[in-house]
Image (cartoon, rainbow, N blue to C red; front, side, top):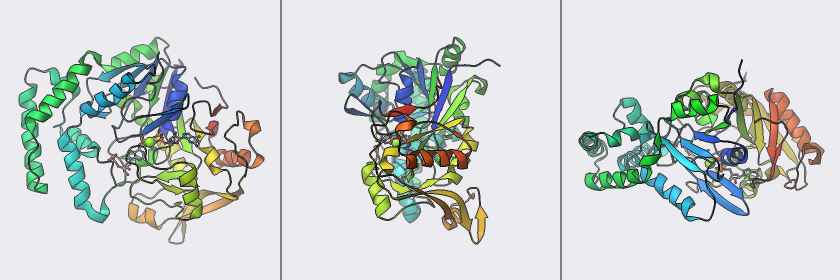
Length: 429
Ligand code: GDP
Ligand code: IMO
Ligand code: MG
């Protein structure tokens, strides 16, 4: 079978695993970087040359001059926000790559954001804890077939069609949430202003990406969120509204799954979660607080403190299966320095029964207690390590244990936020 130069990078936990850092790192050797799902609910932080950069909807390959970055059809896009984000990059002194956008992305409008806010408020204590970027309502409209694709903006009857959808949305907001109407002309004009700035960069992404892969170009697919936030395979209903898993690469970018070669799962050396939902290994204590401070575990997008817990091998195995991971890359290993004893969750106990998998409901998942194995931690600062051999024995053992328990190869690890604080153990790309 033919081998292609295609690599998928997805999160294997509840998001914020360091996908942005890993994508930026591998993008240095890449021709195309493709974001295939999610919207500006993502927050991907990238550090190089002593500076920190953040992207939400623009692919994390943007900071590499020779990379063509594509926002593919599986994404939902707030066009005004996209233009603002790209302007910040363009107006900085950083060299950046090209940006192209699929004609099939679904657009996010102010009414999606308003509905997201109202739905969350109405749920009260049962709220999801969304990022309030309108992501759920935009995907909802896609499935209801009242969403608007970017390619439709240039249709001659677009304004009338948009007005029909707007009228429906205003009725919904009034009747269900008693909200006053939003200004249609303002919304339309904002859309057209943003559209005019990007219209030359709109493509049919599937055929573009397919041609690139078949020509032998290196193509990297960047995931957003994480496997446990997947709408089908995540910890429903406390999930996002798209398929975040690697299986969605082909649907989300319009190519055959046969063109995908290698899939890496990015795994934080511990676990974090933002928003509500069961979290069996959560640490509500000094160890958790210490990890949060050392790892700067505050959402880059919403600034919320992230919930912190031990690494969870049951959740990781779930991600390995649902994303078909070939290997994993461990990030934020440096943050664990200084903890006497580390724990790895290997099973759950639920009402006297041992479980090796995640139950289907949050009610049952809340009842799962982690069963741990313990392993000694290390005191040394490892942020300058450039090889596996330079790690303390305890850190080596920790990685080996994860490999053994999860039955998957660790292909590298990261010991700090900077591009250079990355150790690749196996050549992938
Ligand atoms: P993403 O959403 O998966 O791209 O992850 P985020 O960027 O939201 O969160 C990961 C955070 O950890 C960012 O602030 C990164 O700069 C930082 N980071 C990534 N890798 C490492 C690492 O190995 N060590 C440390 N200390 N920080 C890291
Ligand atoms: P990156 O790509 C962490 C979470 C939200 C909430 C749930 C639903 O940076 O890893 P949504 O706004 O998508 O409807 O919120 O999903 N969530 C994330 N958590 N990292 C993310 O992205 C997330 N994107 C969404 O906190 O619990
Ligand atoms: Mg993030």
